[in-house]
Image 1: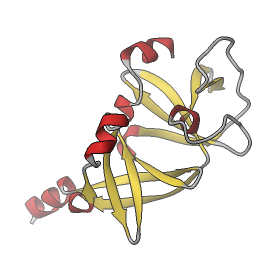
Image 2: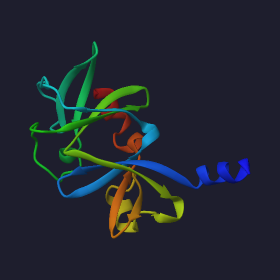
Image 3: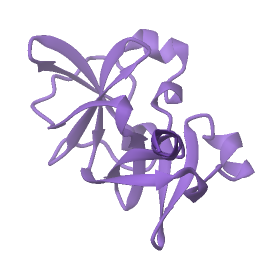
Image 4: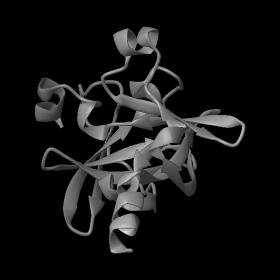
Length: 154
């Protein structure tokens, strides 16, 4: 009986779903360290446009990246944003998003690979497209959102 439970766990994943504008995205829950209301952000001069600045999170300086600006789908702004704190290759980074909506459990059969056209544009950080009821969730691989050079800047 335990084998069946283990197999079931391997065939599904829990996804933290969040919104940027009208689009719904998701990150595997194991990649999320915490979710918080975005505190005051200190801007950094001459940084990339998608870098909002830094925050103090319990004594640690954490860079905040506006995912909407990074993806080219929204304007820069801090009003009513949330941050998902993640660890990307040993660096703690806050990803600014509009709102966290829910956590879902998706079976692997309900996740399709991104279409070929997406793979050429932004497919390196899109793991798949999850089908939830009558809508889609774009599942991200946070380890692929930034190049090695961009990670050094953060």
